[in-house]
Image (cartoon, rainbow, N blue to C red):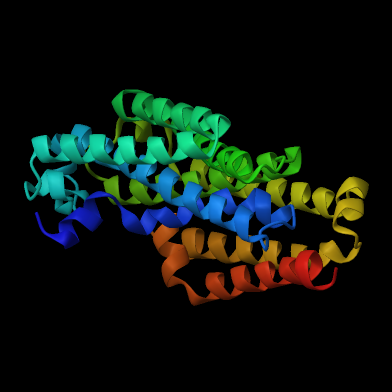
Length: 291
């Protein structure tokens, strides 16, 4: 097994999702504290190892089915470049290393990571075959990332952050299913959960979740408690980036029919990257510079 195959197996590019662990400390205006940053970064690495162990498990379970998919058949286990025995050993090593670091950082974080692993095992073995349940569990995984980040940093996670995280994850999950549905159209052997979806439903669900997300974010911006905590009523300026970012993502998905994963879309689309950087810059100004 080469290093390239190992990186592909653990899905290192998907570690970007685990940046959600930084959100509690970032919005709590404490990410600039060296100790908080170090603990959060260690939590990010540990959670990434645990998440990678789940990816290896999923690839091992799905290998026979992935061999029938035009893209997934290139995955190390499905292609035969990595044996099932090697995959199991790697999965166990990643899980043990990640859990050990998290346990050292925070018992509460270990609880959230354990719940994340348990949910994803159930997802990989069975629950991913049920429409709506599958994307709901993916969204719960993002909430657990945020809660784990709050636990390692010792920062309370607000209800607003949990709700907005869930809504954003739903949009990404629906977009991923839409891409998979387009690839599978005309085939008889595809993911069972796709039987519970069709393009009109996925398009409508994405629009509904996007609308609710924008409304929820605006309510967050104008919430008295948020304005008091941040110390500025100019937080609503960040909403412009959120609205444009969601519109851009809908354009990529619904207009250009981008079937790649949401993570890959973020890593490749310059417009989304600029919008995200602008949004982060606004919060850095409000939370760290202006104060």
